[in-house]
Length: 201
Image (cartoon, rainbow, N blue to C red; front, side):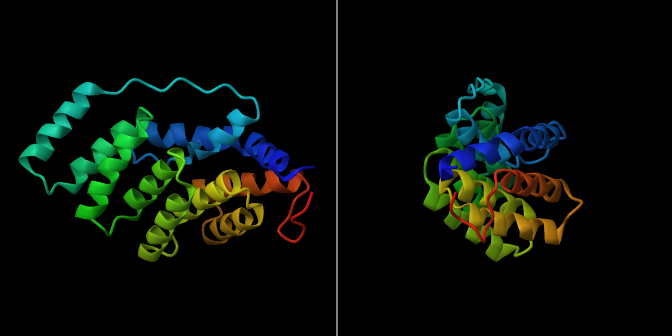
C-alpha cells in the first residue's frame, strides 16, 4: 500500500470520531479544538467538502466594538478568531489568533488554534512550529499533541511522527476525549498495516 493511501485509510478510520468530538465541544461553547484538520485528507480520498457555515456578522460587529474600545482585550480577539474559524475564513482567523496570542502569550489553546489555522491555510511548517510554541507553554497539552499528530499525518505524511504524538496523548490522558480520538487514530494506522517500526508499505 502506498504511503498516501495509508494516510487516506487513517482519515477514513478516525475522521468520523474526530468530527463528532469537534461538534460536541463546539456545541458546549468551548474554544474550537480544530480537529477537522483531517478533512483535507478525507476530501482528497474522494469525500465531499461540507459547505462552510455562514459568518456570524452580528457577532463580528459586536466583538469589533469591544476591541475598538479595549484594544488589549485578548479574550475578545480570541472570540473573534473563533468566529472566523467557525466560518472557515482562516486568513481572518489567523489575524485575530495572532492578536490574541500577542496579547496573551500564555494561552496554549489559542496558540494551538492558530497553528491549525495555519495548517488549513496550507502553511504546514508554520503550523508545526506553532504547536511547538504551545508545547513549550504546556508540555502535557494533549490537544496540541493530537493536532500535531494530525498535521504530521495529513500535512507531512509522517505516520511515524503522528503515531509518536498520538501515543503520547494516550499515555497522558487515555480516558480523555483527546486520548480516545488518539486511540482511534492509532487503530487506523494499525488497521492500515503501518507502524513506526515499518514505515514502508
